[in-house]
Length: 125
Image 1 (cartoon, rainbow, N blue to C red):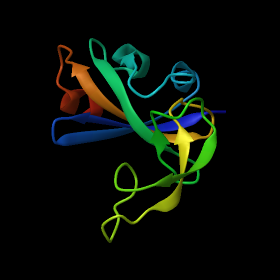
Image 2: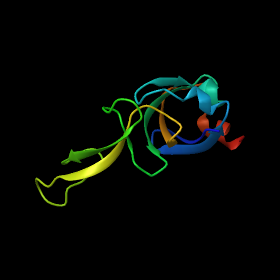
Image 3: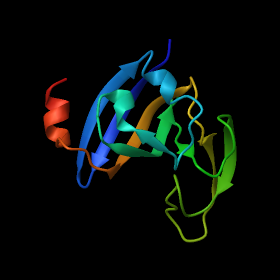
Image 4: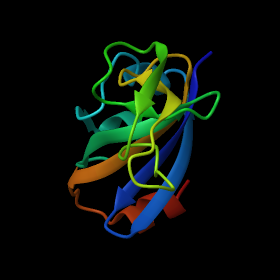
């Protein structure tokens, strides 16, 4: 059984919701950057964009990695690593940008607003 924690951001405000089957099945196979209809999670009229997430070990999803496999990359300054000294690089673990059963949290951003405000829709649940 697949269960995801969804974090929906609209500007500086974020809302969290947990979803399980059958709603969670609609996210499987989607990639970072893809748009998802808000009807899937009860947000009628909204369009949401997948912006990231984490796996069950806490490693971030990375859009430029194919599939949903876990990999260790040698990275410098940038995504997932802030070097304490200039020029420093380290090996860090990441997971591919596709949503799979190993994903725990999915970060979403509002692309298109619906008729009701998010504060009202999330207060009802």
